[in-house]
Length: 332
Image (cartoon, rainbow, N blue to C red; front, top):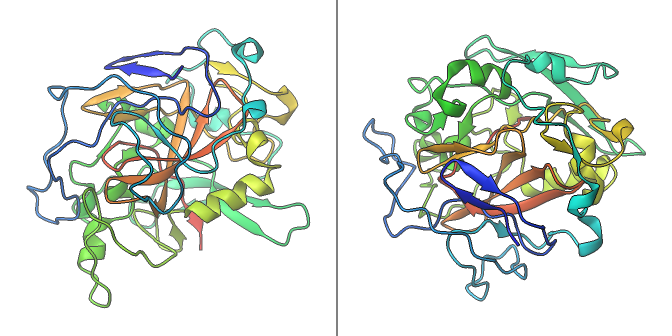
């Protein structure tokens, strides 16, 4: 069965590997264009919209977004890299930590004390972030990631953010812990793409575009929004996609944990279960982390990375561009 989300509550049934966990949200008929730069751009989706019950989606989709991949609306779509059945832990392997998630613990307390972190400062607002270098075994490929979620909100300087990023439960203090939740168009800074004099593009919900990598998006100068391939490279560096969930999640803070305790947050990526936002509501803090990629699937959906509380796996999935997910930036 899938994870079924009603407005404020998630109900987890026994997960199967080839079905994605259901997210609220669907591909509605209205054409919300997130690329417009005016202050009256895309009206926000609110709770008056009907949230359909999630259905089971096909796992046979590929990266081309072909029309042969028929997936019902209201489900979290899976990419071709969805887990095999032996890589997803059964519910019996989940260790409950008695609702370990709380907003009262500062983000610094969740970092791995055995990791030597770097520091970077976002010149736009002066915020400081911990960083971490993660390399594959032979160090032929190294990536430097922010070890915290982005918390940039200046919609006067970055107009793509206007009405398209949020603190969980609309509480500023929560952004100090898990950063902001962004729509995909906000994450890629669609307004900047429209105004690019060399290669202007209209990107966002209902639009397809060909982005030139790296995509800086909402990230600070010298950093960018990771692509699908760069997320895959991270999975390889931490021991493979079937182990990446355990390796990338913080050792504490998740409502439940799987995998050996010694393997948790082994590389210092320190992913917190920040949850998400859809239809005006916030959901799943404590149980899920989702991070946008710079790669779109089609005009409606874009790829993102997902970590679940009930397994050791890291997914690369695609879903509706209007949902609010976290952003982790990667150094150029």
